[in-house]
Amino acid sequence: MSMQTHTSTPTATRNSIPKMVGDKVSVFYGEKQALFDVDLEITANQVTSLIGPSGCGKSTSSAHSTA
Image 1 (spheres, one colour):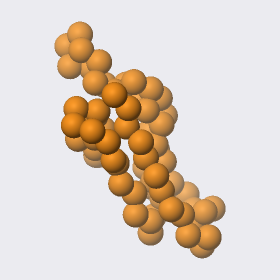
Image 2 (cartoon, rainbow, N blue to C red):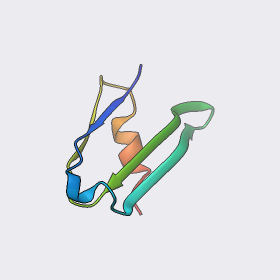
Image 3 (cartoon, rainbow, N blue to C red):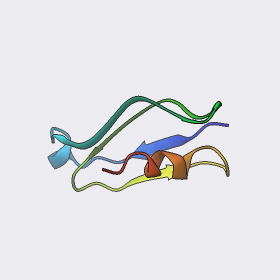
Image 4 (tube, one colour):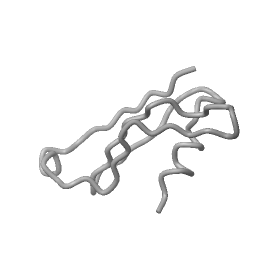
């Protein structure tokens, strides 16, 4: 299964400093790998959504990216 991300970045925020960056993030539950080398960059003032089928890692990625 794969997870797709799509962002629409307004011109005014294209050069913004990212608020959150994930670079090749992998998450394991014991021996089971839930995320495989996920890259994600989120900047201020834009809407970002994670879209994908059940079980592809949407909730896992957001649960492991909060600080």
